[in-house]
Length: 69
Image (cartoon, helix red, strand yellow):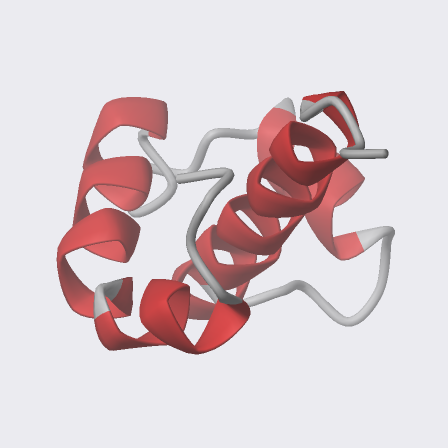
């Protein structure tokens, strides 16, 4: 995932976001995660929350990849 361009992540968004929503229980009202992801009012939609999570994971993984000299 870290080696993918952001456009490649977007191409795989449907499958990734479904997994994130299901695994984290975003549709089930994960009361601990949703306010943190959406940062308050108004409440964030689970679809939007999953994209924010995917973007954050991708960015973090990219930071962890050693830079070539």
